[in-house]
Length: 77
Image 1 (cartoon, rainbow, N blue to C red):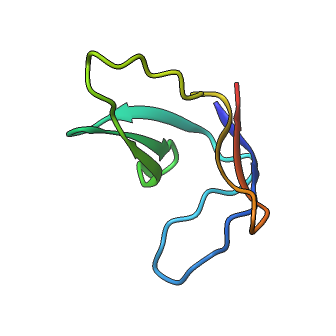
Image 2 (cartoon, rainbow, N blue to C red):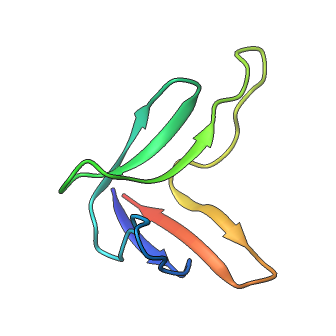
């Protein structure tokens, strides 16, 4: 998978994915991490839902968005 669009702001000392970066989803303790394949750095994470809850959140496409600020993180295959 690759990052298609990332308009989230860049902060000092915080890992940021750029369009074209190859990424993959990795499980963690109670979380799913989106890791950059070039260096293994986590650029995004979200909590896992309980097993009895159906997780319908997208793994590809727009995975994060703050509409009021115009920020978007989009992943493609």
